[in-house]
Every structure is written in structure tokens, then in C-alpha cells.
Length: 181
Length: 175
Image 1 (cartoon, rainbow over the protein chains, first blue to last red):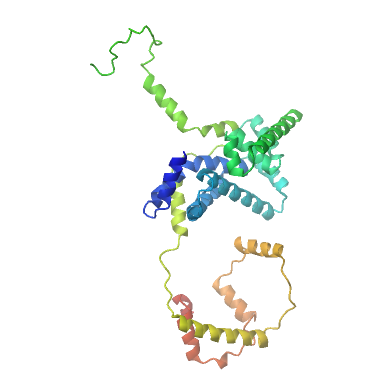
Image 2: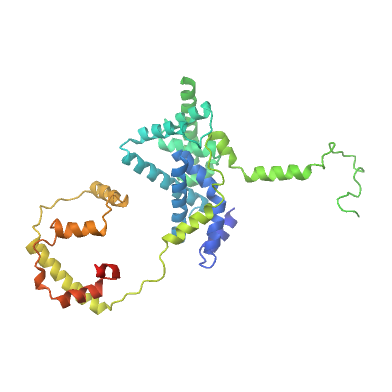
């Protein structure tokens, strides 16, 4: 994977191959990043905007990527920042606290044509919304995207031990919520 | 040796289930396609879905946006540096006169970083959206900036020179 990334990076930095390489990059990561963002924003249209902005940022800043981390974790970080900034702005625009916004996002899920989950899945989303932001991210990445702790650690810049503790705490809170509701 | 036939299929004693090889291709294709759509699991687990064919043209959409946002060609300065410094000097003198004689300075309000952030966000979110007519109205009819400015002191020639050198958009000159 690292060799593939290195090759892709070389192509991305070559002006003659950049266009084609970027297309490959989008093809390769579009679904992963989409679901990463979607789990945070819950809504398809918002996710679409953020995903496209994320790729534009990646394209414009690829020369500033020095390979200190893996390319995919760098892209995940951009996507996470874009999504969180978007949510903060949305909360401000609607004069809501981040907690109130989370509740609103969950309320909207029920009438969303792009949500086909059953009552249990809806309840799960409600439970996730009660978690602090960082725990939500960890839980989404581990439970829905099935990323390894090592990968999440690269993306969030948190130690694997702290991530494990965070995930187990989140899972416990969710279980308690589901049991009580 | 015939294609797809093993030389000694039964000598080893091993057997395969009945019809195992008959639908092997179909099984492989199913396995490959399920491998390719690993991300279907997200939908199954979270309940979220996406519009049909959403991912099909995403690359082209993103590339179109990237191309649109890229600067086109190199910007070549139309003016020589010396000329620029001369014009900048004249402009600075004008600004100095206007700011000291015409505009009454308000008490200095220091903006803390939070207010600056709010302002930046206000501008970023395009809450300020004035068209050309609105700006003209603000400048002339509402009396901001140029209310008491004596334009008769400027000769037509000086104004035309200034426009010639500083206004690139021909549409603005026609106004």
C-alpha cells in the first residue's frame, strides 16, 4: 500500500501526469471518504459538498504533503477538518449549540429519503449523537468503517491505547443508552 | 493435453463436491463484486443510502471544479515598476488629504480576534453581496467617502490618465 501511495504521489507531483493521477486518487478514495464524512454529517447533500471540497483541497495542497504520514491518513484528516468546520458553521448559522445541532441532524434522519435504516439503526444513531465529538469519530471509524486502531491513530493523532479506551467507553455508553430507551 | 482437463484428476484420491466446477465462474464473479463493494457494509450497518449512480461521475465533477478554481494563465503586469511607484505616491497623497480633511476620525475601536473571526466569517459566507449599482449609490447618493471631496480640483486629463492606467475592466470605463 505504501509503495502504491509513493507511486501515486510521484505522479501527482508530475504536472504531466497530475490530472490522470488525481482521477485515480478520487476513484480510489471517494467511497471511503464519503462514508467517513457521511457518518459525521448524516446528510447526503452536505456530505457531497464536503467531499468535493475535500478533494479540491487535496489537489491544491498535494505539494505541501511531505510524506510525514501516510497519504490516506492525511486525506482523512482533511476530510475530518472539513466536516467539523462545516458542522460548526452550520450550528452558528442556525444559532444552535453543537449538541442541539446533533439532535437536529438525528431528527432529520427520520424523514431523509437516503436513510433506510430500521428503528434499531435509528436508535443507534441517536445514541451516537449523545457522545462527545471525539468519541463519535472513534466509534464511527471503528464500528462502521472497521478501520484498525493503528489507522485511526494515524488519522486522529491519538495513541492506540487512548483510542481503545475511547471506543470501549463509547460502546458502553451506547449500550446503556439502548438499554434505557 | 486438452485444455481445462487435469492429467490425473483422480489419482490423488481427492474429490470435489458435485457440480463444484460448473458454477465456479459465477461464484468467483460474485466474490469479486462483493469484494469491490466492501463499502456496502456501511449502508447495511448505518442505514444510510446514497442516490443511485452517485459515485459514477464523481471524478469528473471534482476535476471540473478543480479546473474551474485554478488560476488561468500567468498574470503579466501592464505597468512598469517606476510608473507604479509614481502612481502609488500620488494615490498616497490623495488618501492622506482625504483622511485628514474630509473624513472625521472616529474613536479607535480595537477589534479583538473573536470579532475579526466573526467578520471574516460574515464575509466568507458572502453575506456582503453588493452589486455595482449599490456601491455607486453608497458612494455618491448616501454621501459616504466622496461627499465633500472637491472633484473640480482634478483635471479631466488626470482622471482619464488614472482610469487608463488603473481600470482594466472596459465595462467599468463605459459607465
